[in-house]
Image (cartoon, rainbow, N blue to C red; front, side, top):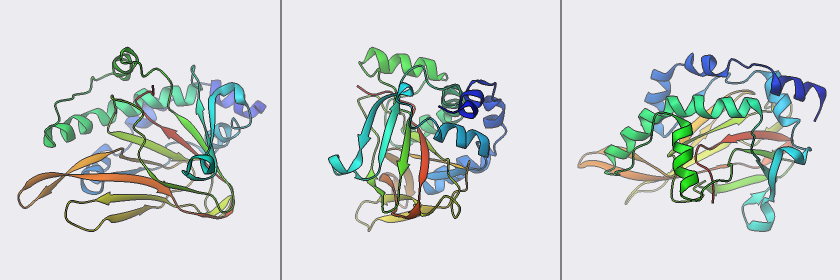
Length: 247
């Protein structure tokens, strides 16, 4: 870990105030309408570089996954271990607190009885009591020709229905290609794809598994998967903030 990374991940970040200052009316509208929403300038370029610089230091991580070995695509990622780096540890509860109302409203609309507590600590307690105790925030690394197949990050019985991915690299400077892609599989209809353009430090909040859609005959569920298109040149780093832990 570089001196810069060590310094930035240990200094106070002001993350809760920064998250609260986002345009949550617009974000909520986009989530309801598209299943995803961009969180502009969530991290500074210096914070992005600091997190990406953690990747070579295995002391921060519990496991490394090479995607090609499992049919997940090409590239690799590492799951952070507890304790999480300060920046990630602050982002997780701050974002959760802002997304909980949408998660509960979606479940009510879809006829799902599960409700989520106001605090992330209370939700993690629920996960850990069910044997889901391994941290799920992850750092992804892609090179030329790498990609991430469409998938869902479920990990166990207890699943928070939204998650956040933050682009740490600068498109056009650090890499080309590598767009975030979301697909919706709608009942008795062809699937719909959404490509989300991001700049360095931007995040995308999106549905993990399914979301409610209002149709002419009432509300129905659509199934969602997400991935990353092929990197055409350079290297791309992303941090994934998943709110439920894994078995």
